[in-house]
Image (cartoon, rainbow, N blue to C red; front, side, top):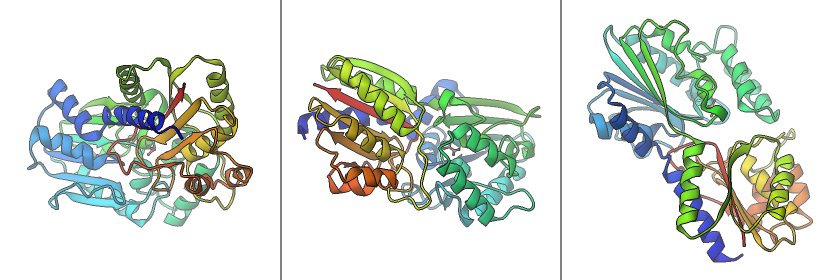
Length: 372
Ligand SMILES: O=C(O)[C@H](O)CO
């Protein structure tokens, strides 16, 4: 692989991610919006710890705060912050403990109080309080089925809301205070707050308090920052589009086609591809699957290098963010790995896995391609 191109792609990807990190996004938004000092902060999602740090930079660290995040995502927090780690993408018993605790904290907010909610993707799995008659085992089976179905996040979260006592605006219907401000990092198409985290930060229909939601970071912000970095490296940005909303095989054909027929330069796409999983999936995630499907499509196109990775740094249930592939990545054996949703194992064997570690943000995925 041409190391210089690989390095440029990494640099462009990280420039996109840096622009949407939780701490900086929340700090900037709070400074710009001039919101009241909250009496309670609740931060939920994969970027919860970083988002709370941003709020503490503005308001100080003496405000009672609660964080719910994915396992391994809260190391940066001081011990004084009430923290619950839970499982993603399939909820576990800690998700239910978190659901109970979050509801308790919301119910305890006194009249006249101000609540600041910080919400990022992953919240749907991390926090849950089931409606009567549903068990954790039901929840896990239903989530596994939905995630393997190839559906996108909108319809998946509709189903999640139906069996929940806190999703879809139900959590905040228990708030008796004066105002709720929600700062959200969007990992959904159209930045729709009712889809994000299944509406964990959505207000009830007729709130008895002032309710103001703000999107503080999104895929567009990341793509624009990535494009700006590519331009500053003297590279021509050919595409900057949010359109990765289809099955990985379909997208691989479309993207390879655009690359084959387009001019030299940097191509940036964002979004969240889908993939249908077999009954016993191997090791990988949607980004690794798309990277491998693309590797087949760009066979013999030596002028191409492609990096595709989740901005949260954890693609599916793996510790890789995605893959970095060229015309040399694919071999005959790869088809079987792709079929068994085991792209991660194959990419690893080819030195083509891309790892960033948890990034403190989550604005879906970025695909950066270079044609030289
Ligand atoms: O948690 C979720 O529901 C997804 O990440 C979308 O926000």
